[in-house]
Length: 505
Image (cartoon, rainbow, N blue to C red):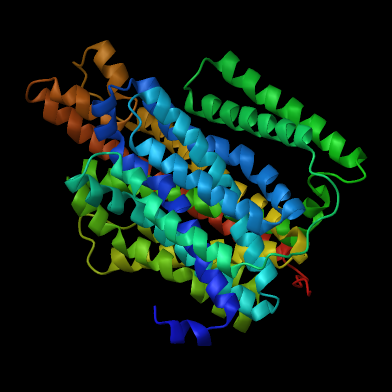
């Protein structure tokens, strides 16, 4: 970029550019690995359990680390924590790219989560501090939302392009040059002095919070997903609840709590967190199930399915700036509730539409869904960050980022379990299918296809047709259920944002 152009751009917008670039690799890393799993599994000889940990360890740790890192940033400064996070993330990416064993790759993913948990809340905290004007802040958060939506959508596409020409480690190595550019920008642009929260950061309370969140999230995922014996899963969840209860008591008794629990008493923050969890969970779950519908039922290739879903990705990427503009024009309450209501309409119409003959209707509905969900997510950011003082920005940002992590992980888990249960009840299996094969075929459409490929005609075709019919019915029910949830959420948000007023510095 020309130096003379940079000279006329207000410093605050250059800071926004720097923190958005810092945020982009963290978001891409949430989805880019999915496309690389088959390659790294074969290259490292990873077992199914190791692959599961390679994928899950990043969002699981992020969920536990975000709030402590956000409160740390409020105590010692966003600039210092962000720079440290960028260095950790860059080093971890380099180590991950050349990890020789599954165990070492899991270890590097732990470091990636640590670095990412430092970056994400600081980005929102810096935006809150930098943009004091409410209208400008809404635009800035809209642009930030665009980076988030575009990064998550582009992750698999970037990963696929890299793996077309390079080895699986390139999915991590791409982060290194980005960090080498972003870190100096952050170092030069961000002010060295900033308002911080007084008092010491309590390490023991942070460790207690991290352990509690990790145990609870792991217990929920293991219980719902049935990945562990029920006793183990419930024990983990109960342990998490117990640890978090102790943490809450410590915060209420402390003169200088690590996390100001009064944040949850502000209706706009609570509404924003609920919006973030439900909207990002619905977006992730719908994209996952739609991808399966396109490939299993309609017979599209992965590339064709990706192209089919481009409208929802593009619309989600432009929804952020639209949300910022509309919030300034019409008010946050109307924009947030209307976007959720329209997303409910889009989901219901998709449920009743024949994907075999999409025409212009299906792409239009996908655009509407991606746009409205993205507007809803950006509205949640505006509600949360507009409800806190500048010194509370990183803590509030960490709560929002945690909501995204929980929404994505738990959304996919709940959607998967919902579909599995409904699919098993809906499928009409061939009467002459052996019992062990029938039990496996009823688990999911993927298992049905595996079983069908081991059979001979006409039994094989009969099973595949039964699986397609059951999955289409399941997908319709899932979309209708999601539509009802979004409609109820729209009404709830309209009520909770009554009387919303953004904080003034």
